[in-house]
Length: 233
Image (cartoon, rainbow, N blue to C red; front, side, top):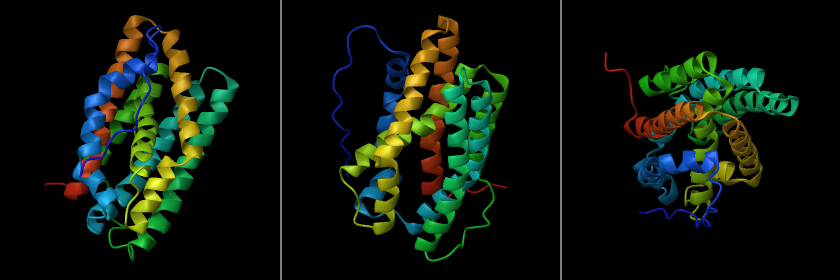
């Protein structure tokens, strides 16, 4: 099936915000995500439970390192409100990992894949995230962690219009289409615009490259779950 993207009103002609520039750069990636059989399978209920189980386990592995990345962003954030917000997001990522593992694995009827090791794509994605937040600027790190916020929000918003006949998949869709999560994402996008407005052209270009790279990793993460990726040797 085809998932229609939500109607988006035209952006103002001037000025072009940094977030608008970032999103424009990944529109083909986002379109590929919406068309991926993992995502379409969530909506029509045909996604194999084994693929969803792989996703849940790998996402719990991912979120542990994502929380570490958010903690570094918190330490480098420009003001106290941003420090508190990112610190809260880091705590929330760990809580989400624990809740997701228990709720979704129970919904899958057990924990057959509970002990599955970190898969290649998960390892590559989290390694890139941590290297960027530790080795780059605040804007670099912000751009690297942003796709996990923003793409999930946009996917959740798009899928919420269709929902799913499967109650487990409906619950996943509702979590990311929820207004509470959408508000968090708007806050991070607004911070990205503020940080981008203060950066040089070269700094914005480097941040955009990180944003595009981790957006591609988002597609790869869903694709790895669809293929139930394991280490080849």
